[in-house]
Structure formats: C-alpha cells, structure tokens
Image (cartoon, rainbow, N blue to C red):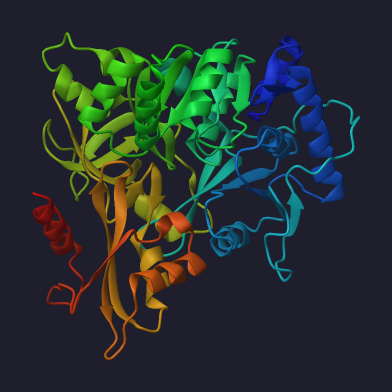
Length: 501
C-alpha cells in the first residue's frame, strides 16, 4: 500500500482540519493540502517526466511546501531522497548523483553548477493549479519510498532504502509506543524534516492533525515557547542539545512547559543531569527513542511515564537507559560470531522487524555486511538488563554525534588531507557540554610546512559542511600507531579523557 493513501483518506474524512501552518499563518486545510499535492504530482509527472520508481531529491531547510513535495512524489510512485540542508553543495551533489535523481528541489534555486545531469527547481515554485484530485499511484509494500543517505566511518554515504511497509510500521510503532496522535496536536518541525522529524509526520497525517513549520525554519527556543502559548499541544522531536537550550530559555522566561504536549528526544547522549533538569523545569513531557536510519526511530523507546518515574527501585538506571524494544522489533545483543549474549553482557545491538531497511542503494556488499542471518547489525555496542532495558555502551566505530547530527571522521580527514601542508590527520570526538561531542583534529604537518588553525578552518569551510569542521586542532609530531601502521584513535581518546579528569 502506498503510504500517501493516509493523506488521501484523511483529507476526505476531515477536509476542514488545519493541515499546514507557517508559524501562526494557516497555509492549507486538509482539502487544500490534497489539491496542492495533486497539482505538484501532475507537475512532476507532466513537466519533468517523473515516473514510478524515479528519484526526486529535496535539498532544503524546513518550509511549508516540504510535505507537499514528499506526498506529490509518492502520489506518482516516485522515491523521495531527502538531503540534509546543512551539507555543502558538493556533498549534496554526490548524494543526488549517486541516487540517480532526475529532479532536485532546492529552497533558493541555482545551487549547483551547470554541468550536472539532474534538473534543479526551486522548491517554492508555483505550479499550475486545478488538477483533478485522484488517488495515489498503487504501490507494493516493498517498493522504495524514502532513500535516506547515512554515512559510515569509511567511504561515501550509503543510501538506506526504506519501503512503504517500513514507513507504515514505523508510524504504527510511534502510535503504539511513543505518543498517541490527536487531531488537535500541532506537530512542530524545529529539527530537519530530511531526518527523523520528517518521518514522524505520518501518524499526524493519519489523524488529520496540524503540521507547523516555524517561521525561523529551525530551532529557536523563544519562538517555540511563544508557539506553545499561542497554539498549544505542540509535539516535536529534539536532539538533547536542543532540549538543553529550550530548558535554559524556559528558565529565563519563567516558563513551565504549558502548551507543549510531547518532546521526543534522541540522536545523541542525554546526560542524566540534563534530563533531570528538563523534567524539573518543563515537567513530564519527554519520551526517549533510539533508532538509526536503517530502522528509523524504532529500536527502543522509554515512554514518558518511565522517563519521569521515581517510584521504581531502579528508576535512576532506567532513566539512564534508552528504554526497551519497540513494539514492532526484536532486539538482541550478539557477539562477533552472532551468538546471543546473556543479560548484562556487552555486545553489538542487533534488530529484526518490519521497520528494518530493504538494504543499501546500489551497494550489495554493505547490505550483506549489515544484514546478516536475519539481523540488522547496528554497529552500536550495548547491554540489556534483567528487565529488558537497553544501555548504550559506545557508539559504533568512530562516529561523532554533535547536536544530534552524525559526523563521520573519514569525511573530515579526507578534506584536511587535501591541504598541502598536512601529512597525517586523525579526527575524533570529545565530550562537549552543549553539543554532546565536538570534532577534534590531530594534525601532523609535512616536513618544513605548517598552517594556522584559522587557515585550516577556512580550508574546511571550502570543502565540507560548516558543522563538520573541527572545533579544536592539536598539532603533533606523530600519531600513535599499531604494528601495522594503523592509527590508534583509542589512544587519542584516552589522552582526551585523561586530560579531562
């Protein structure tokens, strides 16, 4: 079943319900959203020749038209490729080219060079209106709907193929485990719609609830507090760093969380003191989720009652966990040989269930490595307690999570190694109170060459997205290596943590 059918049904059942708001301004009710989607679907098919299975990329900040575009693509059976708007255009162009997108929609237009093979169009471009309303194109459960690019610690980003069935089960899990969607909710998109925040819109569509894109097009604590007071029933996803900023702003204003119904947090470590403080200031409005693109938003959940609970004998430990297995998946901790480990033993977190991806786009080797013996191997380490609560021991490999955004050291290292003065470089993450982690680069210069931090920062800005650039440089004469010449990042991390003691 095409996931876009949920909008088709909701718009016919509750045509006058508010659908899209731009800050305080109503853009569409559900009847208007349905007509706008059909107009765009007709435009994509008849002007750009988009056919079922074709890829359409979206490289933009959050805008009210974002949901129109997503559903217009599914309406004609196309595949959406949401691209992180924070990426450098050269990085975005690689993803768009690898996905073989025929059309890319951008916020401002004219982002890419003239030699690209795909067609670029402004996301907010007006299209011809008055197209007859028709039902979405039929789709099989296994047809790809959402192609989400996630990087590993080596190589280029990989395209996670999420089917209509994957998305439907993810949305059902949300309604079962995370929050009960209500027609009078306002789902707020303060985090990027290209990621988890956008994926959460399906349950809201199903009940014909409102979708609110803030006028700032991002996360602004003062704006969110104002919208909570004026609109009420805000529901939104936020990275731990966003929660911390919101709590700080709430304290300044003397705000107690009224008008916010639910905040789902995840995407990085939430420190115990931070969630304790958030509960004290804003009250029991928090739900923790743990997932990854390969099983989107649906590995574990810690419901609001358990986040806030202090009655259980082990409430502190539970609050520090990432919860128990989502209702649609099976969770196991496996050793390197694939044997399930007993309670309390640390191993790789592995998942089975209908939310697990089909595989990686045009990458059978990576698919085979990640999907083994019926399990999705997350690459993350953790252990289960006797009650089935999961505790993350470490992130996989060298992944850095800063402000809820994944940063992959290899990408930063490759950019720095192109600098003529650099001989070797190793990039790691170090703890940082506001962002969770920050990027640190250990640099060895070429003989008789050097560069300043400002020069390297300028270099990185020219080659990678700004948020990926190192926040600190350490200039060293050599990097620790094993007998095979492999750089030992564990030694670098040990030095960082020792210095913090």
